[in-house]
Amino acid sequence: MSGYEQRVAYLRETIKEISPEDALRMVEEQKALLIDVRDGDEIKQGMPEPAQHLSRSFLEMRIHDVCSEKERPIAILCAGGLRSLFAAESLKNLGYANVYSVMGGYKRWKEASLRSKIPAQLNERDKERYARHLLIPEVGESGQLKLIQSKVLLLGAGGLGSPVAMYLAAAGVGTIGIVDADIVESSNLQRQILHGEDTLGMLKVESAAGAIRRLNSAVKVQPHPVYLDESNVLDILSEYDLVVDGTDNFKTRYLINDACVKLGIPNVHGAVYRFEGYVTTFTTSSSAPCYRCIYPEPPPAEMAPSCAEAGVLGILPGVIGLLQAVEAIKVLLGIGSNLAGKILKYDALHHDFSVLEVEKEEQCLCAKHPDEIEIMPIEPQVCAV
Ligand SMILES: [Zn+2]
Image (cartoon, rainbow, N blue to C red):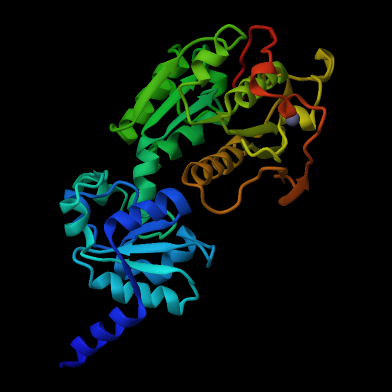
């Protein structure tokens, strides 16, 4: 027996092998994880429908991201049932207690006519375009595909919406909706870099769509040149996976908050005033606070300056908008930690970043069942920063 044959014989004795049917049963009944460890090229023709792809070469490096519970059953599948033996041994050595190898691999899975899927793949153009994302394990090909399939709605194509739109488009977010009923004015150009002198007088959503198209023609832009109110907010927001709030008037913020809470859509919120900016993320987690947890009621009108009267350093919404874009990407990819329950405050005049903790309020609207949440009327105005 060669050394290799001896190793395989040893692995067959020490690793539990199960049939594809048993693997499927474990996934359905015991919440086991089925991991397909074949290479990217091998899965193009198909893979088990309930499997996650984690190629053999990255298995040890990334298994923790896929499964952090060491007791959870894991079934490993390859093409014919050999590589999965080696992979299973490696996971056992990493401390995973219940690891199995699927006998006969994907060949036998197909012969048994179990459910398969053709995984989505990046085309060659996208592989080149997003090469720097593909190099980051936390993004990779599956993360990039997620971004391409994501739909993000920007509330306002102004100071905050400008950098968010540009960077989300550059990152490959597939669908970007923009709500803004205003036209481009010369006083906008001090900060709203989506627009230019050649688009003065144009609807901001049209000007923004042109800028996004120049940067990434694959992005689908959905313009909504309307003022948000209680009659249209649910219809518009419900088409999207995530909302980036760049509006600057309080009433619209409450409207967006209430609609996001009702619909279960994460909302990345930003605000700027003179030299100060704030970012926070309202997620759909039941323990996370919403905008009303922080500000239960709108301030009186005389206390709430709008963009036209408050003034803002033109660069500041660039900084805050980019922080919103980072939050949006993390939430879409489900990576890292986000600003749920925290407000990140930036003081540009004194180069100071600070984080304030905020609690969920038990009496707040976000503690209610979504069906009980009523969308209350607001004054019909959306003002982009
Ligand atoms: Zn709340």
